[in-house]
Image (cartoon, rainbow, N blue to C red; front, side):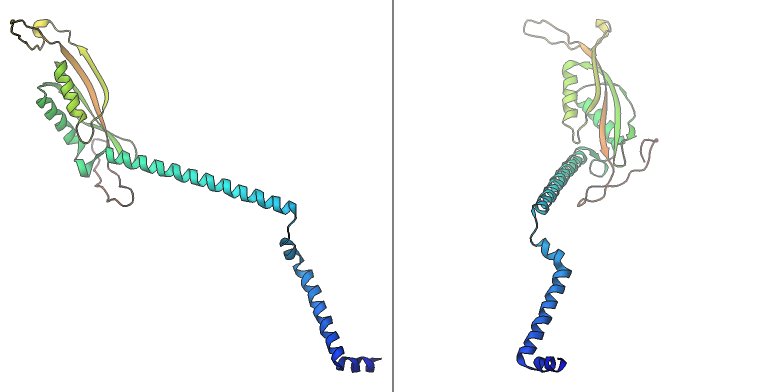
Length: 227
């Protein structure tokens, strides 16, 4: 029997049979080892549904990330605008000195005699911004007061008011500041004086500009309000 098998294997037909058998065994081995991978090429409905859910989840996450990115861009734009509109030490000078000068020169231009002009107070907001405040009080006709406020509003950087009060002066008429206006009939009228009190409060910036800008000068701490 063995001799016949050996003789058969020596023939071409025998060799072909052995080769086919070896190939068949190899295919069986591969199918056994890679059956799981092959099945992934032809997923069932459950696998397809799981894949659809995963895609939807990723799309939702992408939308959320885009929303957050947009919000961050808006915050950055507002922050940059706040810096641009604030009083910058390097660009505009020291507000503790120039804020008083601005009010004094504006009062002089509008014929107002200041009763009181306090010292500039500062208070820290965060590492980059701080408040600079100045109290102002005087008595003046309504027209002069309006001119004074209008000129300060036109100042660059802006000089916003934190509070304003204007009341009629209760002093006797002969002690009031009045202005006589004459017409062709030689009639006269007096203009009532207003008692004005207000506080200017500006936002000053002494931090670092966003990327792409140069670093602003740091300001030494003064009177406990600044770093």
